[in-house]
Length: 238
Length: 156
Image 1 (cartoon, rainbow over the protein chains, first blue to last red):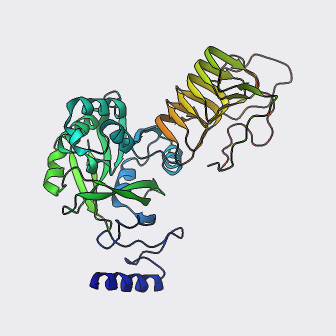
Image 2: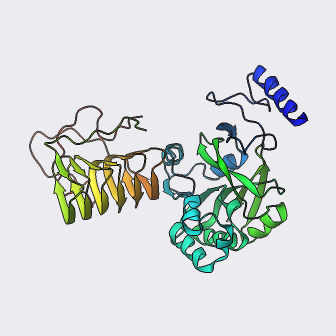
Image 3: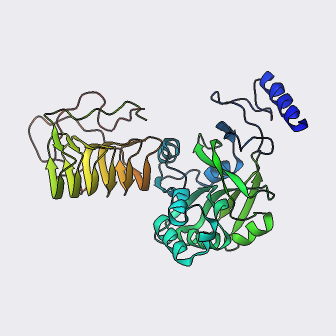
């Protein structure tokens, strides 16, 4: 009851101010979104929200002044990402990693320990020659992978990335939940993204700073940014 | 992104119906609508190839414009535009000047944007065609004048 009242008060307050609850203006007329801890995921997915992303900013900063790079975008293919990356003069590879995940393992996380299925998943979604990519946009797909699959996927990504290439991933920073919201990500510009919630999925494992650093132990560097959607943006240098 | 509903092909256009299966090479000088199964290659000179909702194509495709409503497994090369409509599925690599992809389309592969060079003014007398086209383009393919935007222009 108390939480509901607080939520309503917050909504009223920020609607009155014409922006979101963090003081950022509404962009492109999208409805305001409550932060992850207050949103009602079980009832309806939150409306799309456009916001600045430090991870995206860092990723594109790493590509500055270059053309003709090879970028792998593992989001659901969408016009915004394709237009943005190809307009920068890069060659884009795209594959829906979550779709491949569902195809290989269904919705049962226990299947993600099956070595044969892991091999099938890697062949169907990440079968590229070694050192192909100058950048990888992984978005939030890691958080739906169990430990064995996660390690195999990161090892494969390490192989297909060139040295000094950057990888961008988002994982939940909420370690108390078993189901986490999946999102789709659209690039608006070099600093902003449009995030749309796509419902809840089973979390593969808990991500904290220590196991993220361990996961990317072979990479040169790992950097984190916390976001308002209880997401941790990770930028990793191969 | 196009949101206009796709119309069925006109009766006098080249058409491969959904009960038809073709294995081999298809070469056309007119627009082609494929609603059946094709295995091999499909190539056209400065025209549009449309893969209909029932189309199942395992072939490489070359054309001025490729519109996909069905399924393709193979590479697609368009001098002007590739248009992936909702429910389309493409596994293969795309080389094109422009691309449009609707939400709901499935695509796995690479996208290489190649803006074609603006064509120089036509010479007064016929002469050899300058070797500016990629080696994979049809030999000596001289496109007829096209209305609207000049070749290579990007329509937003």
